[in-house]
Image (cartoon, rainbow, N blue to C red; front, side, top):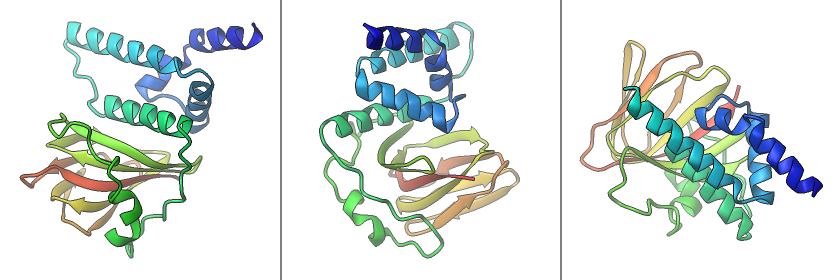
Length: 207
């Protein structure tokens, strides 16, 4: 009874709404994910909140952030894999000397690919998760919208395809094998320039 009471209190606290909106801290994110490991039905609550926000956005002519759903779905996927017994290996930190071959054990996994090749927007598969570092394989079909990071460094290693990353007034053109780190406090957006989705290793490192 005490466990279920804490679960209901957790849901009613409002943290899930903040989680979906991306307003929670790294510690609060871990709290949500820990609770989901104990109560997998928590993800149903999260998805219901996401759907409600999308309906609200549509009704009020608000354009929802297309990154929210892919990141949420990749977190749910990771939780299911961990419940299935997967143990995450340490993912090498991206740097200017990083090579695609350094990450082949994740890139070559058959389950590390979009479930639907006709996905819309952005698709992600988390391959590593620690309090300091999130690592994911991502596929961007057309673009990733403008965003700013104040508390974490965002790093990319391009695996397939090409893209332009606009950092405020500067434009950086990237191809397979290129590494790029987005500066803190800078607005940036990604636009795919190849005929195929741009596949990259993404890392978000706590500043």
